[in-house]
Length: 400
Image (cartoon, rainbow, N blue to C red; front, side):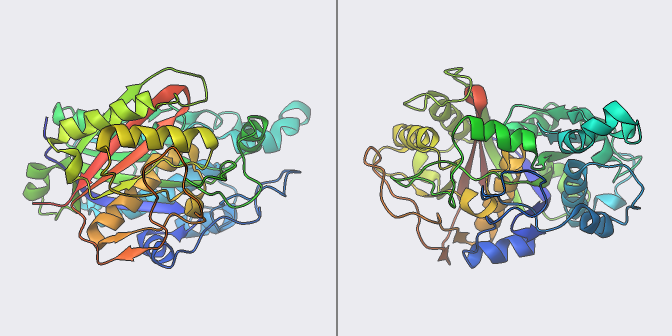
């Protein structure tokens, strides 16, 4: 299978800021979004995170949403990213088309449930947030940003591969002719559930994370949202929209090795990357850059690195993880990093792998340690790996 699916719009919000220009600027300046906690209400303020630098009120103001309108932070972030992607792809002028909206999330509206749990029990003043707790409700709330145009919507929840799987599911729908256009990606906000859960697993770093470094200690949690607009090349030509790039290949595999850990030799990651290359009709040597999952945990980075060695041998392409910029936005990671991959591809740069100092002994490569500009990239591989060994890889390519 060689895909004829193209990307015609992208939108993003993360710890790097709002929009693709802010994101590209911070990446080119090697400026991290990881820092002290500002908005999440928790006793664990000593843990560094990558929060979106806007309060809920700020996000409401961007979107023109009234203060008394009930909406979760996850949905607010999703709406902001969706709006940018829709505007870039000129979807507001599209009529009588089948448009699918596929969004990945795991936390959903839990951050509001945490805030108002005691209220639910005691005085019933915030009960409207009970209905906004689940993941599907967040997807529905985001879809209301584009009222009357979305003809199908669904939610993907496969932990940290959720948004990448949303993109894959959307691409399959296009290939099967089940829809004309797809808006796919994911959104996630920070929550105490997130923070406490990962802290219990003992995989949070008390300092800014160090992906692929010998002395890495764990990840920094992040939040954000991103969406891509996809359609077939023929459909884009018919409506006169110029594609940004091509989604040339993709794959999802699951090794089911462990509930939270990757297999030692990266079996699922290896199979996902290998299958993505096969679906794109590419050889390993065709990949110019890998945006790695690269969480900064001892388990993930060595496992992913070994998987890359299995695919690429002694010629591993340029590699970097961008989680030292955005933190790990969990279910939104695959979409945010897809947008970063597309920016790198179309603007010919490779983001630095921040905070790296010493190579992992078992790996035969080191990541890119300083931002590279004026680099001719043709095919970029983007990895997103989730709990349970649910591993996904997408390949974005320049248009021929």
